[in-house]
Length: 59
Image (cartoon, rainbow, N blue to C red):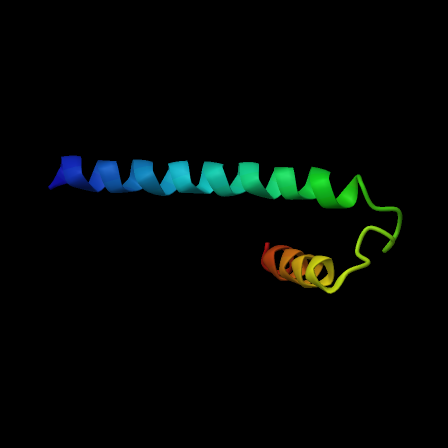
């Protein structure tokens, strides 16, 4: 039981790490390449910016 639990936790923390990496990639891609809102011209980018805001409004 304990071993199983530990494995679960490890997977959980790994997942957090992965999401952090993904978030950082997102940040570098969207925030550094954009000047103001110029980087968010098309609708898809707007949607992504919205999701980004939603992600970070909680933390």
